[in-house]
Structures are given as C-alpha cells and as structure tokens.
Length: 158
Image 1 (cartoon, rainbow, N blue to C red):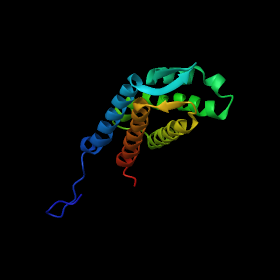
Image 2 (image 1 turned 90 degrees about the vertical axis):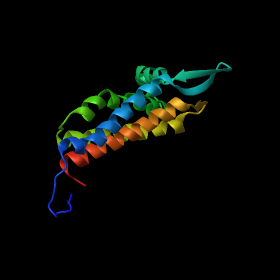
Image 3 (image 1 turned 135 degrees about the vertical axis):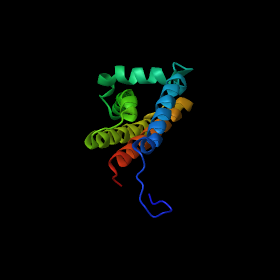
Image 4 (image 1 turned 45 degrees about the vertical axis):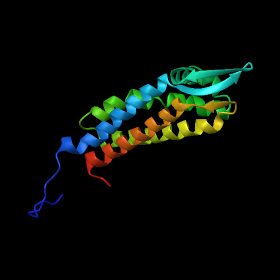
C-alpha cells in the first residue's frame, strides 16, 4: 500500500486477517442456524414430513455405509461427512497463522464439500429443498471465501 508521501506501509497482520476471520465466524453461525431450520420436505407413506438440518446431517453420516451402495446415496453420505469442515472451521479461521499447505488443503476440502452440498440438490428425487438447505450451502460459500482469503492474505499469494 502506498501512502501520500510515497512510502510503502505494510498492513498489520491483525487488520489483514480481520475480514476472513469475520467471514468465517458468520459462516459457522449460519451453519449452526441451518441445522435448526427445515432442510427438506419429503412425502413418506403418503404424508408430508419436514426434516430439519440436524436430522439430515445425522442421517447422512449415520447411514453412510448403507447409502454408499448407489450414486445418489453416495453423494448424500459424502455431503454429510463434508460437514466436518465446519467442525474444524473455528480453529482454522481463528488461528493466527497456519502453514500454507494446511490452509490450501483446507480451502480445497471446503470447495469439495460445497460441490457435494450442491450436488445433493440434484439427487433429491422425492422431496422439496427448504430454507435450511439454502442456508447450509450459503454457509459453505462464505466459509470457502474465508478460507481462500485467509490463504491469500496470510502468505501474500495472488
């Protein structure tokens, strides 16, 4: 950054990391909210039933072995397992310094989890996506932004 006098000033590490950290905190909060919101509405046995985000997450992880038998189930199971990126998100976002390889690997993991989350929309054959699903995907987008900004800002890469 160039000041009026023409001399260079280097932004502080604290100011440099504030945006990704805040974005990561918002992403984690939105993820927690998505667990309490209705994620999908399905017709089971002729009755319409709403499944909360927490139920969807638990079922997708709990049935991962069974669901891996077919492509549709595999996407849902892997998307549920992808929620693990939010388990470590507070540590990754709030930590002052991360190794460049760890930061980039985390950003890639978040991107894969986001793609799997979006893919679940195409595998839902007998249901309707609700606001919890969209909050969940939005949380992934925010977390991906935080992770990639953190990797770029921490290490000065572009």
